[in-house]
Length: 327
Image (cartoon, rainbow, N blue to C red; front, side, top):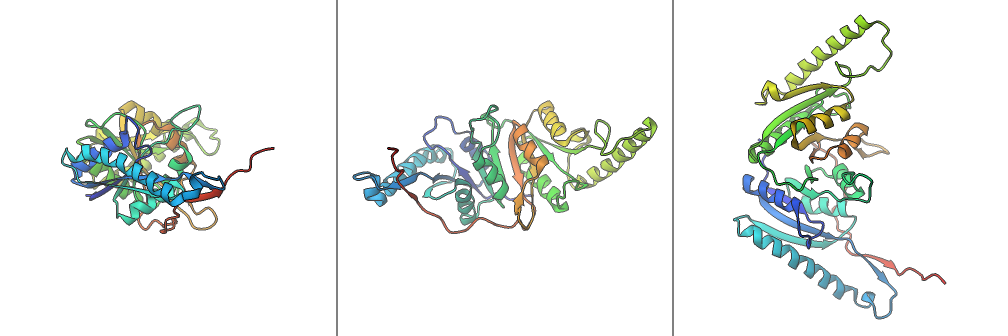
């Protein structure tokens, strides 16, 4: 079983009235007996060149601003400590935000990052922001991205696996998805489901036109049988009952999103991969679309030996020349 001993919570706004990421991280910390750190990254740009402004005493402003954020975090931590949790706080000047979060998580040897979804100015408020996206893309540590404000109450957890590796995912990634999905489910006393979405089985589509209807039916039958064997093989070390094993056809994004809604999943667990070369780390078109379609919380897992592409050294305060006023 996956051991979660340290959890880092990326607190976007320490002064917010509602902190769903903190609430859910606290639930997990209590269940796992894990240490919790509340971390706030300060990305404010300081501008030089204003006479008598903050740039005349950047260091003083930096200290005061950090102290104010730490006070806010301590107020939150005090409430959690009264519940018996071990909680520390940290606030650092660093940028960009996703790198700062990963740096802090690696420095503290966190086993899980919990972050609140940054709502952007989109037509659909569940679309991911650049910070969310880059955090999920670059973090070698599992990331739980909190989209829903509802606390976990015996939640349904859905683990999305790809045993036939249709999207070039390594075989060991499915094992990690299932292991951490099972650990989270057990910790919060939920129910674990698994899904394998396959376009070539009934309900799916074909890569090429099929002229004969009987040939199409035979193709789908064989594809479904092959997918079922691979799916059951991937789940053979789990205790997931047959009623919670979902082999679904159709576009994987549509199929998984629909299933998630139908079973009322609170968390969807899936994996992302990495590549060397110009593209570096990427998530892929299927996962990219899935990230924005799902309204449940997302738990994103990386394969073993995921390359770390985040510099370990903090960048500190971002200082820039004051903008020149327009004539």
